[in-house]
Length: 210
Image (cartoon, rainbow, N blue to C red; front, side, top):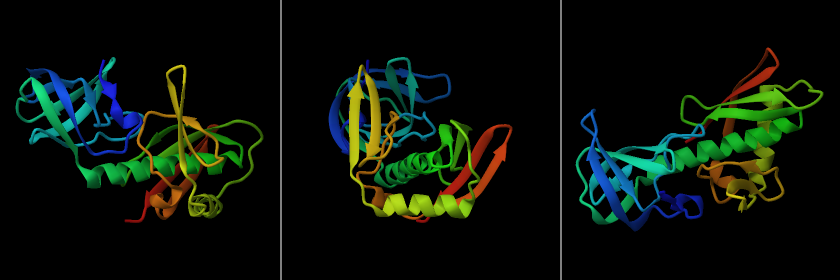
């Protein structure tokens, strides 16, 4: 089982061990490490990219208990240095964190987030009603989110029975395996592009300023 070091560390570089490296049918190589900083695609968050001993990691995917690192060349078994691309990680982290804050803000109107897509150009959170709902507009939701972000709340990570949760300050915690900003102000300005209610669900599209 791959140890998911990114669960408790914001580091972008570390040393690990290559357990195996096998060629895949698509010309890429499948590398399994003892421990990794690479967040695999999942939970609405895109995969990290970077290098293993200088070899490009094109994508990381979760398969069972293992994180598979898909590379463009083989990586020898044994010690390996991991380096996660910082710019890509930063934008993924900001988008994922913004999705959480939008989820918290929407609770005021009677909605609970059930899924999301946290990437530039495709930012979206889908909600289901958790009680009597009230009308929510893009303007009102944007104001709620901006107020929470401006509070500069500190991230809090916790785990219970193997279930990892994240929140900031006194906000509602969510079970999540993604990466998140250390303080809410690091998210930046969140723009609510569209709010649409249909068939008992609320869809919120969002973008972040660079």
